[in-house]
Amino acid sequence: MTLRIERYGDVARLRMSSIGSRAFGMDVSAYVVRGVMIDTGFHHARSELDAARRELRVDAAIITHWHEDHAGNAAMLAWHGVPMLVRPDTEITLRERPRIRLYRRLLWGHPPALDAALLHFESDTLEVIHTPGHSPDHQVVFDRETGTLFSGDLWLGVRSHVLHATENPYQIAQSLARAAALSPARMFDAHRGLVARPVEALTARRAWLLETLADVARRIAEGWDDAEIVKRVLGGEERAALVSRGDYSRRNFVRAVRRGDVGRGA
Ligand SMILES: [Zn+2]
Image 1: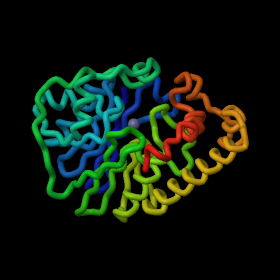
Image 2: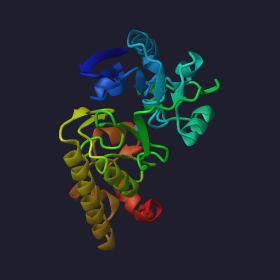
Image 3: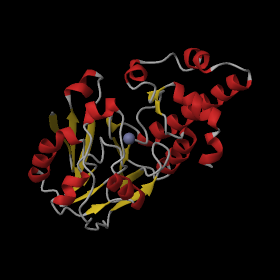
């Protein structure tokens, strides 16, 4: 496992990858700002993460959502008595230890169940905002003091075509608007790192998402099938879809429109 610390003034980026994740060009980052760790990386990187926690004198943590590449070491931090800000629905999920797909177990590791009592943490300057869609429990962290947004998995690039089967893209669009309304001066994405011009980036992602969803809805109304839409509107499927057996794919875009997620997201 690799963990590299990059500095951005008051923010430290803890950039983590495994051999498997690097093969797919993927890594994930946790951040530390004024002693508060935002997300905890994945289980395979637990020793590296724990060393970074000591080095950076972390005394509290916030979890953006339950996914194993973000909350993978939440149980370990709880064992160490680190106070944590975790949404109640995230906590329930972490205590249940959901099954995760094989490719995700291989890339990131299957974290143990959260079994220690959580010491409650609340910050004067770091605010959490519920931004569901990527997962129902997703929240972003906004540093009011510096106008810095830690966006977790809300953004992920303007034209990211790939969705997990459980994502609700319409809800993501609403959450993007909520985040843009904070007018962040700086933004750190959990996979892409520092993002330039965050308000523009969030707004552009939202516009692209809504445009693409409308386009997909139009083709469905015209009777196109999923494979045709993926090929002609979304530019074809990528390798991730094959490896994840469709759990992480462009086809999930089409499925979300067919499911009528627009109603669920309202
Ligand atoms: Zn995620």
